[in-house]
Amino acid sequence: MSQQVEDVGRIIDGKAFAAALRARVAGQVTKLKEAHGITPGLAVVLVGENPASQVYVRNKNKQTAEAGMNSFEHRPPDTISEADLVALVEELNRDPKVNGILVQLPLPDQVSSHAVIGSIDPAKDVDGFHVTNAGLLAVGGQGMVPCTPLGCMMLIKDVLGDDLSGQRALVLGRSNIVGKPMAHLLLAENCTVTIAHSRTRDLPEECRRADILVAAVGRPEMVKGDWVKPGATVIDVGINRIETDDGKTKLVGDVDFEAARQRAGAITPVPGGVGPMTIACLLLNTLTAACRQHGVAVPEPDG
Ligand code: GUN
Image (tube, rainbow, N blue to C red):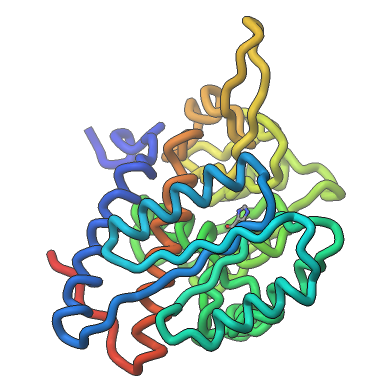
């Protein structure tokens, strides 16, 4: 059987890839401690009691500790003022034990997320959301890259190899967190990039041209099977909870997985695809940030 045929419909195991990445980062953290006495530290700020955010933050803290890093949690009430939240961020900016700062979004209405993200020291902005880091990504400088697009790029390269030159890539969604940074990463790899969104004309046809299709719109199963170019690599960033016929709920992506899988060369499932990569990349960014702040090289991974 040729490689081409074997690859058809491959399901990309993001869960396993993320576990391997976390293990690699944990090994690098051990080396950093041994060689330089540095333990990377990540501060997570969770405002209020949003249940979904609480789950994310619990997972982040657990995985940070498992990677051998220090984890600092701050949980101000959802009545906090913008000035007080900015003051907390500035305190974390000054704390040498804190190498990475993540302020969990969304924030309550009285707080401007722009103002809060803008107050994070760009060198500690492990989410890569600060305008300085967004700008560095756009102009090709060395900043912090947002975790979800970084994880998507690793999965794409795992399928297609490191050379993505000339591939047609379509990014569905234009958010600052995923769509725009994803487009910049693909462009930096010499892909021909289209950003599609709710106003795009003839979206199915645009999608059918894509060798790499990244869906990040937050609309359950919007991308149909016949929107997928045969053999394409499909990366589904969506995590949507929908009700099933029996009154229960389940998670689905932005892509109709079963139908798209019939045509895709490789495709991420939901759950177990892109999702686990986000925290793994957060740990990687925290390691990178700690090394840069101390002026030391990131230790070579084992293997
Ligand atoms: N809320 C949902 N996803 C994210 C994320 O990646 N980072 C932050 N800070 N908040 C989020």
